[in-house]
Amino acid sequence: MISVANKYESQSPQTQFLLGGLIEVFRNSDTGQMAMIPLSDVRRLFPLKAGAKSKTLFVRLAPNKQPKGTETVEIVVKGKETFSLGDCKYNVLTVKQTITNEAGETLDQFTALYAPDLQAVLAKRYDEGTKAESVVGYETIKPLAE
Image (cartoon, rainbow, N blue to C red):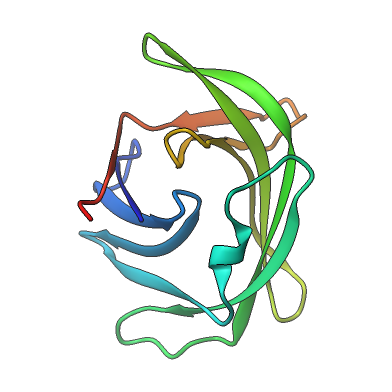
């Protein structure tokens, strides 16, 4: 499990907990909390390898809200590249993640830049291949104590 602290321009700081450093299972911020409970064993996804594909059902939970059915997290490991974070360069896997609801509507889609050596996502790429493409990187990544 990896803990990631981040802050976006107009939002309060948040902490995410990522299974295998890749799949968000809990988020906490001043604006609320959210948990994603897997309905199958997601440990089988790791270690990630180029070409790997998986689909996992989750239930999204939030305080004072009833779940709205299940969501599917589809993961496709597309390839490898080098990514710079600060003064360091990392070999990363490019992992396309698509989250859909029960009706098949896309709720979120991005490419995670996943460093297997750190077992952590260093950045996320949104709107890949378009003029609106953007990369959101992290400043602090640290493993939880075992």
